[in-house]
Image (cartoon, rainbow, N blue to C red; front, side):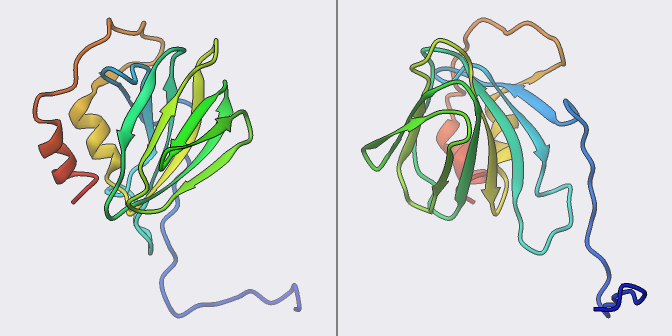
Length: 167
């Protein structure tokens, strides 16, 4: 290809977002996960061909993401730090920095921090709306803020799931 020529497309160009460290919207998470989830790219705030959301989650030692499955969504995790176990359809998989996971729809999974330090990962959720779930069940987190005392999930969490991640 001749580098002096530029490519041209008939369709308009896609969206661009540059989000600096800590530039997402974060939410403290209720028991049993505790910790927090930071939404970095939200499906309702970007124009993309394939809808998705992207963020980071932190679960402290001894805590876990409860067992669940998404009937119409797919999820990708990339472990940044810490250690733990992902149980997928009852099968345990060790987690360490650099581990990647893919959960297709209707795959039951839980994430357990059985280590001694925070377990942290990036998540990609297709077709998005995980950000709506985190906002509905959590409490907004300000940068540098101390973690709140553990708190319960909303009583209507099943309805929240239906309006967000199972919509």
